[in-house]
Length: 344
Image 1: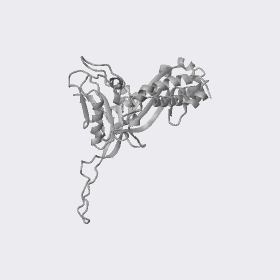
Image 2: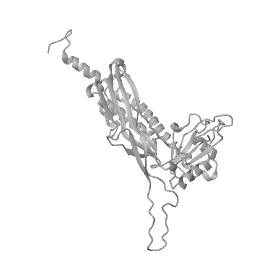
Image 3: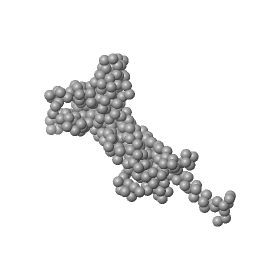
Image 4: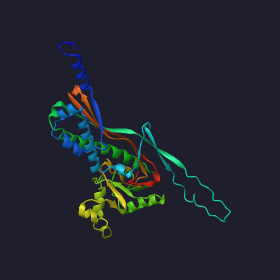
């Protein structure tokens, strides 16, 4: 091929263009970070990106992000998780049967010839709007001299933390939409945080069970300092501290005393997540805890699992790593949730 412009061939120009514009993506599904780390452990970032088109690095970041989510409180576990099929659009419909009014299905047969009056169940749907939750990190060419596994480990942890916060925030937002079952603490507009107690927890459970739901999931946060004059510290740790010496709860909290962890609280699966904490525990309507029927009350529509992408960004003399997940949360059966919050 004839050289042009000072001896640069068209072939070389084409190769340079491809290098500047490559975009490689990899999903976390089915990937083994340990195996990838062993395979590419002795290579630098530059070697991995150059020899594999960035695929291996994307795979390692996605796999490590998936591992990181597994080490954190994953609110998707309390949800009814539906997979959104391709071509499903940006709105997903959770179908459910509305809770019938008391006595609507019961009938008394007075004699053998009488028919029971049929009462149709009302089929409804809750619509979740899908969104992309993502995080981006720019890596300069100077950083490409380090080991690829080290970079993938750091980025995977950071991206996993960011995605976890984004997904959990969306789910907790849906969980907080209940208006049927609400336990209000404190006084509206007093600006003082109020700690919840056993009575509040059992009363919230009772509200769900009165709607024929199963109160099996408890969501709260670890700790929030007292707000306002005369306010109290709130969260799970203050709750435990205020009841740790009560004889009736010694057995219930024995596991927590031994290990610092507790998987269930009075038959409810426990989710203690700082992401759930209110920004101001003394504000009107600040959330302190939620109880729900796990697997039914809240829905998570997942369109795409964790995906990491590598893109060369010449203007920054480096490349960009983007990790994202696509889904949407929606309260499906509202009477199967109960909130404990500050009065409003």
